[in-house]
Amino acid sequence: MTSQLPQEILIEILSRLPAKSVGKCRCVSKPWNNLLSSPLFISKTHQENLILISSSRSLHTISTTQMDGFSRNLDLLPDTWDVIVGSSDGLVFLTNEEDGKFLVNPVTLQKVHVQDSPLALYKPGSFSMHGFGYDSSSDDYKIVTLSYFDTDNEYEPDCADTFVDVYSVKTGVWKRLDSSPYDHAVPDLASGAFVNGAIHWLASGRDQESGYPSVIAAFDLAREAFDEIPAPSGVDVYRFVFHKLVVLGGCLCMIDSMGNDEIDVWVMKEYGLVDSWTKFSIKSDRGRDVVKPLCYVGDGEVVFLTEEESLVVYDPKSGTFRDMIADGVPATFLDGGTFVESLVSPVFNDQV
Image 1 (cartoon, helix red, strand yellow):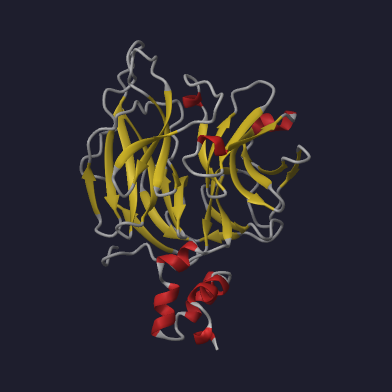
Image 2: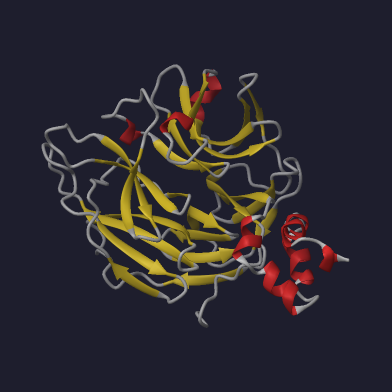
């Protein structure tokens, strides 16, 4: 009977299954295996989950459809994770305390160690930021590293050059591109936000006459070049480089937590359109502690990571908070992000 269904409907139905059930369906036939392994099917995956790094630097996942359910502790060595850089199609890019780089699938528990670029800047004395995403033009996952030496010059851009290194997961090869046209020496060495085929960072321009304005720098993975994305109207063009840029509900999101009385959160509903930025403000005293929005749950509520390294759920309609409780999860968290369940393997070309 399924052979009579249009492919679009079949994908819509099967994409709602848990990843392990999808794995069983792949064994039905070769056409089903090809269908359920296709980028189109992966892009239709609906089941988003939280992935968290606990205070003990272990990894945990929680289903966003059962916010008070039981968490899963991922048995992935080394057990000293530090940052969740980003995710795409079920693959999650993580770094640890020693800046070790790993691609993992939280469902299958497959893990690949990514070797450093042979051109990586030596430490101490340099700074680096990472981003991770999928390039549909080449059907490849890519890691982008921005690195620089800090000049510590009060009157000039902080870094003379920001080096751009790109790693192809498919080939296992690093390459260095032309230096970034922006000054990426920012107070927070933030991970890039992957949206719409590009990885985004906050940076400053290098035009002294215009006062080094803040920009949203978007590194297009297909073209391997930088563009600029318009910031929300009304933000201080010389100040928003101090904000935070993340992904919320698949959209670019900017957070201003520098105000004394409230925190402003902007979400770009339609990518690239300045008029599509929507804003909500958190005026509660408790809102001063929120650090990073992670995902939507329920009817527009937002899960936040706080300065106390706890999780809270904020309702923009009522302006109220509630604690997020999940059995089996440590009390505090260092970092958090989201991923969708999939069976995509981080192993390409017999990498180990």
